[in-house]
Length: 95
Image: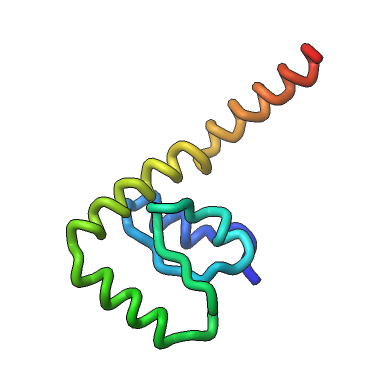
């Protein structure tokens, strides 16, 4: 199990496509088109095959990486959380 995977967010912030297993918070961090999620965290063959296939498509690496960076900037950067909390509090106060 994994909570919020800081290494996942760091890789995405650096515009790198992440190949990871669909476990814990990692599945919540990687949106469609921002990385590749594998179902079985113990299937190393599938992981290797997925990574090897991705390395054969440099244009896709660039595209996924750019989407990943944008996703992190929109969802996980500290000031975005602060703004969301302020909006939530405002809605609760207004009623």
